[in-house]
Image 1 (cartoon, helix red, strand yellow):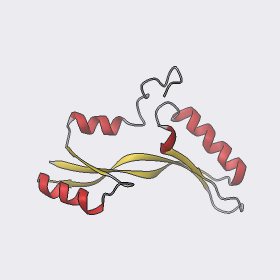
Image 2 (cartoon, one colour):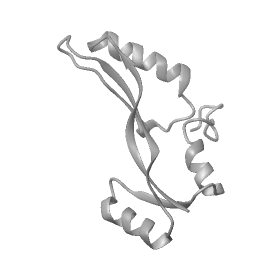
Image 3 (tube, one colour):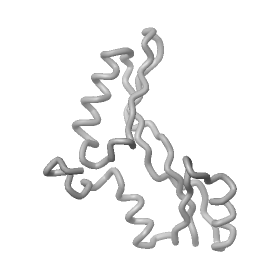
Image 4 (cartoon, one colour):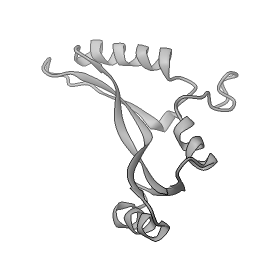
Length: 117
């Protein structure tokens, strides 16, 4: 069994606040839950300024976008939608490589404790 993963922006926290207050709440949640586990370019905050809507803490994480019995089919799917800014990765289901992908965001990054991410 083969799985295709792509790194996608996914909501990790939703705030009912907007503007600076929504941004501050999302930043606090990031610091408490994800700092040291997510690289600097893999998180962002989407907060509307107009007082309507919600603010979101977004994380770019590996997301499973397909499961295939054959490797050629998995690679065909990966090539179908993957490109430089949106790469897809094929892994064997249950493999060490898949576990490493899924650990991103859950384990501390090497060097994160001493601030040398």
